[in-house]
Every structure is written in C-alpha cells, then in structure tokens.
Image (cartoon, rainbow, N blue to C red; front, top):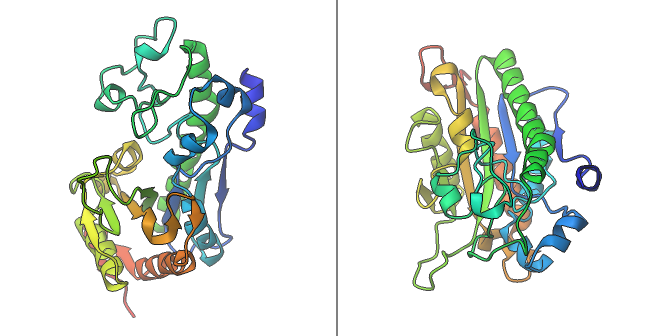
Length: 296
C-alpha cells in the first residue's frame, strides 16, 4: 500500500525556484493537489467529482508563473482530503481508525472535532470520506512519506530566504467557496487575508497586502472566516524575521465553481498576483522591526 500510493503521487510536491531571487517571498499552494491514488478512491464512499470540491482548484496555476518572475513557488500534488499539510502533523480522529492512535496524536483539536484533521474524516460539507475504518499504520505512512517531506522542504526554502535577505515571507495561497455552507450566508469578500489576528506577520505587511488588493479593485476581509491554518501559525514568527500570511481568494472571481473550470477573469487574476509580488519587492524588513519602503 505504501509503495502504491508513493508511486501514484510522484513527486508529491514541486518547488519552482528561480535562479535569482527577486525577494524573499515564497508563494505556497498547499491545497491545489489533484492526483488521487487509485486505492484511495476505491476506499472512499464519495465519488471523484465530489471529492474534488475540496480542492483549491487552479490556485497553483494562478501563482505558478511567479517562479519565472523571480519568486519561489511551492505546490502540492496530492489532494488535501488525502493528507492535509495545513494541519499539525498528528491531528487525528480516533473514530477513523481500527486500532489505537499513538499517545502523541492530537485527538482533541477543533479541527479534529470537525472531521478535518491531518487525515480528514469528512470533506468540507460534512460528508464522510471512507467506507471503512483505516489502520493507524496507513495514516502514519502518509504523514511520513508526504506530510513531513513537504514541511522539511518548505522550512528549507524559508531558511534560504532568511539567509539571502535577512527575513522571509510565506504567502500561503488558498481559495474559498464564494458563499458558506448555509444558504443564508452572504457572498464572501473577494480576498480574505489571515494573519492569525496580527500574530503571524508584521502588521505593515498585512496592511500593505490589503492595500495592494484594494487598489486592484478587490474587496478585502481580514481573518474572517479564515485567520490562517497551521502553516500560517507555524511559520509565522515575526520576531525571528519569518512572516506568514494566508491569502484566500474567492473562487467565483476566477472560476466556474459548479463546473470547476477557469473563468473569463482567470488571466487577470494571475496578472494581479504578479502585481502583488512586484509591489511587495518594494518592501524591506528593517532590523528594528517594521517594514519600510525601499529607497528609490
């Protein structure tokens, strides 16, 4: 089983690193993976099309071209409903497994309670994924072979950015449904920025990203309904020069949500991310703390 799913997702993620970095800004797309191992599909009670609704479809393409513009880009190939790298390494739901979880597993987080742990139990609208319980060894193998190598690679990128520039920014790029689960929910903003309520990056960075998107014509929200997941929280440590911000893009802007196809504004949105990256190169991190505009 381990060899089979390892072969099916090869490589499990990609890093496109420019020969020369323009700035220490890493664009990361952890939830756009769409390579589904056959044995995983055989074990699910949900059809392939329904599973794909949990993907951040095309987000990897929206930021992918930035590697050609001097910014490192990281994308995951396996789907988040198989292994979710935006969780702690061992957020695991005991209800999913046919044997006892190890003592170090976090079985009591809010995400586990909602069925959305490292190995998800449900997809976003609450539908159970698996027909039968999994073995704990299966879960641990996925974490060892997919989750851990991904985070080692992202950490190396962030470390390299700090070595080259003295600081690093992880822009964690996601997409969200245009409305929530409830029919009464209003349409979400075009962009929601998550900085863990001001703790994962310098305030001036979040303010600048908001200003850039606003000037490009987008409506922007902060931290609601998404304040940033494990990646934003874990990598965001402004005091050490490592800043992380989550960018949630409303899918209705760039794609047909029902058909899961690129929409007429797709190329414009990709170009706007180029504008975002370009404007962020005008920032530098001063040793005293705040971001400042670079000297002309």
